[in-house]
Length: 91
Image 1 (cartoon, rainbow, N blue to C red):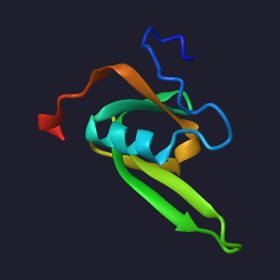
Image 2 (image 1 turned 135 degrees about the vertical axis):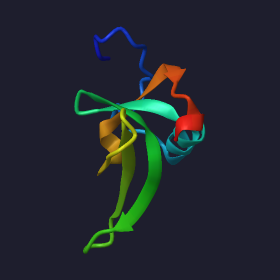
Image 3 (image 1 turned 180 degrees about the horizontal axis):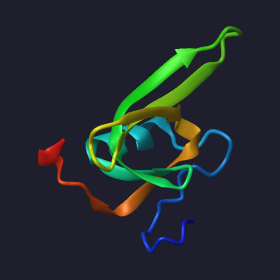
Image 4 (image 1 turned 90 degrees about the vertical axis):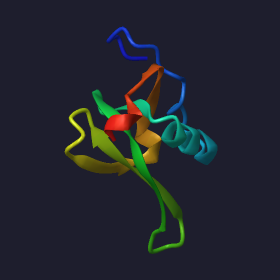
């Protein structure tokens, strides 16, 4: 749990992180997320790929707090903030 005063779901624990259902729910709710100590506005894309040896890899695209930049990261490395949502009219 981060000590920035925001409550965080317990997603991200374990090797696989959030389930696909949790990721989709976070996208629908426009939930804020934390990645590598930084807060992002929301998840904009959920990406499933298959690597060279046939393993499924999950990643997400995150929108920064200013709404101007996106970053693609491993889905297992994000945590969803539960307390507030951004104003979806601005996305």
